[in-house]
Image 1 (cartoon, rainbow, N blue to C red):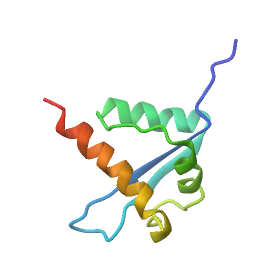
Image 2 (cartoon, rainbow, N blue to C red; image 1 turned 45 degrees about the vertical axis):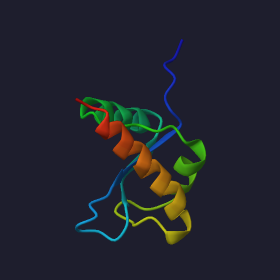
Image 3 (cartoon, rainbow, N blue to C red; image 1 turned 90 degrees about the horizontal axis):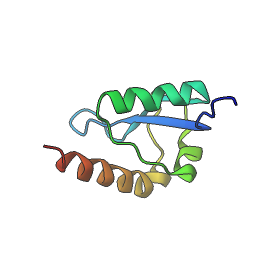
Length: 89
């Protein structure tokens, strides 16, 4: 049986001191998506499975800021990340 890979993955970066909005820093499908997820896990970066948001974010180019139309969705994602980070020892 062939290994099943995630369809898509997108990684964001946001440094509120240096950037106005989060940016796409990696994206991919299949094996590349799996590698993005593995790297996130290896570096204790929280992962959120949101197929609708991934679909929108994957249409952006690498290093592109997210558009204002999806700020609310990404703000919810960032709240999830901040919450997950605050629960770490």
